[in-house]
Image (cartoon, rainbow, N blue to C red; front, side, top):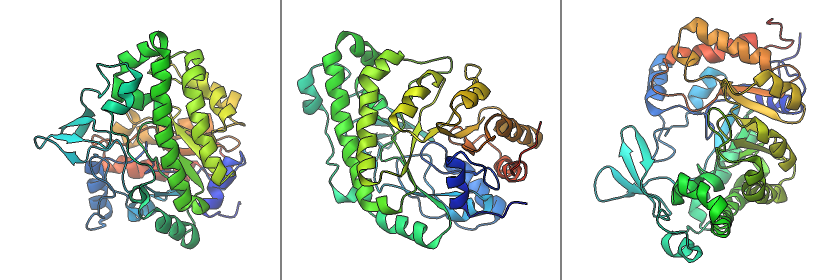
Length: 385
């Protein structure tokens, strides 16, 4: 029988593509947290009392409660920026209108927020990138207030794997789509490549600055850092070609990764990208991405084949179906855990987690069942067939 490992040892063993005592589990990262309603119901389930103070505003995923993570038995703990540039926190003309740090308008349709008309919706002039968008100063120390203290405390006084959450919710591609409009920006990549390149470079410069600030604040204590999330695919395939990705987006990712590794070459780097992104996995590996989230369970995604091809070169975090299995019976949740362990756990390289944020329609009992089943069925050697 294998000696139990600490959470940090367990995760590092898995990320070396070796087998720890059990499959690590995670909840609470930038793209795999809990909506507030579900958090409150889990507080009641475990009788934890009052909620902790919200760690951010302008979102429907607002609480980071280490007490809950301990009850669920997860292996990751998180640090987070004090502010995000695309958070709708600046009050607008009415109670449902807000602005983010770019000056982009957001609307609240409870419980969610959605971006309004993009600041560059009507302009593809390079000069307007600076004229129409209010670009935040990444060197403002208020972005990373509290990060160093939290990171040092977690690394020094707890056994957990320490993760720095996203410094911005959206990466270069999605931020460009927010500012310009998705259809417009995809057209720009073909018809106005100089403008598209200029916009991506300006966004990447900001994100590089925020990542640099994060690493200066807490880099010595981080085990992993999340890149800003960027979705390059839908449910059936990519929304831009691999050639377009390599020409326009891959250099942006390389700049951000290089910024991180200048501070700490050995740090683990996670990328979140939804949808059927399997054609881009070789590019992520070439860039030096260590962990890919979510490897979404879709008909267009052959998870066992991806594990076979790439499982020794990159690790996977996520894959638990939040749209069907997590809404079903306890037995369906257990079967979902079993399926993902069979597909992904062999030889290490897998951290079990939701494939996106767990939503308000998920029963609290199913969250508890998810992690109980992961801990029970995920013990190595795994014999589930």
